Length: 260
Image 1 (tube, rainbow, N blue to C red):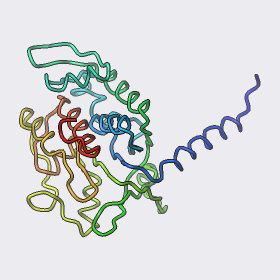
Image 2 (cartoon, helix red, strand yellow):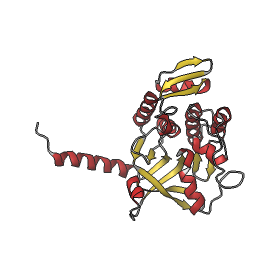
Image 3 (tube, one colour):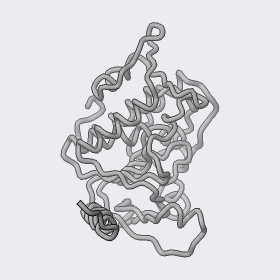
Image 4 (tube, one colour):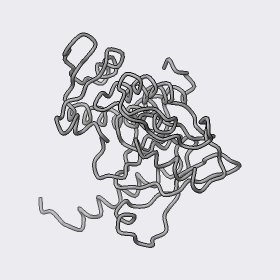
């Protein structure tokens, strides 16, 4: 069969536009394609929610891709191994309570399962603002990441969402927009982002899960965003808290509670 370049282009443009148009109004908009965002997307989509995940980079996976210092292995603790098992990611016991997994296998498998559950990933997209009505975040204002990087003056477009998850990691990108531009008080001791503290793996893993919650009307924090928002420490290349945080935030939005 002869191939036509214009047909190839039409196939990409028409299919992508249909996907985009179908997700201009969603149940949950997840911002950040790291482990917490991907895991949340999987459980939410499996629970029947229309989910769109926005990642500013070309690739998804966040900090999980590189493991620790580009040694592409990750560590999870006992409590989180069950999630890797559920996704079908192989994990080996290193010492009692410590399990290692291949970072690439973990990212690609979790992403694949999220997509097969029905979530849609839109990469190379940056969230530059939010939509607020009556002090509740109702959606996102988005643009192409290369537009932002080039400093081009191009107006963005809007996505409506009943719930937003900030899973952008250390930078808490959605919360910083809200803090800077909106008259909304965050559910922290100061009403502002407290900021990430120095490394303390044990405490950080616990607080990542504890701090996963609704931080202002319509917006939840998960993963490292939760710790950075509430002033928790960083944890390094142990990812159990991220996985458990993603599952917890999905349960909260689905109404199943923290035990989902």
